Length: 478
Image (cartoon, rainbow, N blue to C red; front, side):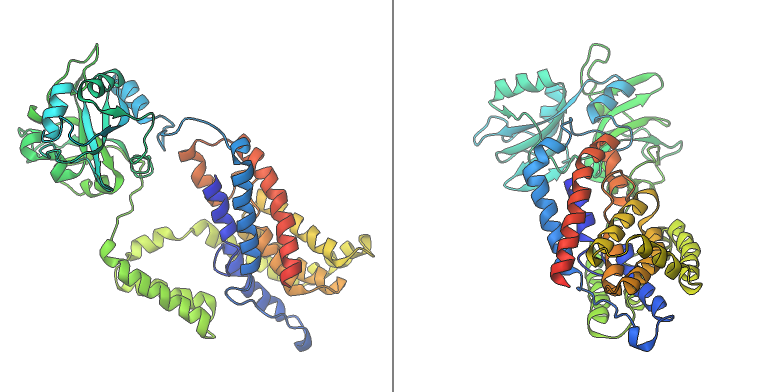
């Protein structure tokens, strides 16, 4: 939640940080079409809102540093991103396997140094699915790997068995994951199922012969065959089976622990059918990093140093990335939020109609009749509150399109700065912390296990803080 909230706050730093900020200059240009030449509203530069955004970011960080321990929920971590179950709970419920993911420390000169991972796993009925030595981590290391140095091990097995081994070999079992904490979060890796296809070239071969971990980059935890589950972990219902020596058969379901990018690659392998479908399928292309940075810099330079419109400058960067195959046309197409496109296609004409027909001026006039004599800053604060309420019940883009014309009209009627009132709307539509309607909050809610009540508790204070800090920052910066 702190990361998500600060990411939203960071979107107010520049004119390309969020959808409302990107739209703002275009909406101002549209409003200028109906204004006399001497009343034209200036558009904003790329970093014009930076002081406001910086103040919001600092206040958000301080908020969580000071009050985080009281407002954030305290629940167990490691839950599965899609099912709400931990890896251990999923294995137990689905396959009857009792196993815990534990990190242990192996001191220098330990007796296990010089032994192969496969020998340790087979002898003690557990899985070593990660090694770390002097900051160099290997996930799902080959079972033929020999432990040469002291370090940390990520072990999946029965906790009491791991505790016994730690006592025998002088290892230290840590209370929770430390060095491997980020590597085994379910947004990056988890348990998946793949099925061996009929006629696959691997039928009749053992995982040892295939060098399964080395070839596929994933750890084989169990083989589900018919009504039977074969696993190296021994339980009351499942005797330990040395999986490395079990010949694979057509129709075998292989239960694996895998990074998601490895599972994505396996989808194109003709020997397997990937059963798990709900996982991040983004393909990593590190060799394209240079092209991506180059065209990002080109787009940014066009925004900063030319008169080219923001939308065209960003389009140049996007086309360049497609041309150099940083991403494909299909990926670019899927990345577009078409529901947002059609929402804008409907709301922008509505906003223009409100402006061109004089509806915005009429509403502004009626508002000012009831608020006659009120200071301009109170009207600006009222616009901020209105934008905040709107963004809770509709998209921040829709709220911006509808309220910017109204804010400009109110400012002109009250003698305020129309540009500042318009900026107030664009900034305040990011004030979406009370309920998980913002895209960032919605994205984090499932993997983090948050509930609506958590957002009400932490987001309620953040909403008020946002309003106060943003209004003070605007008053000081403009």
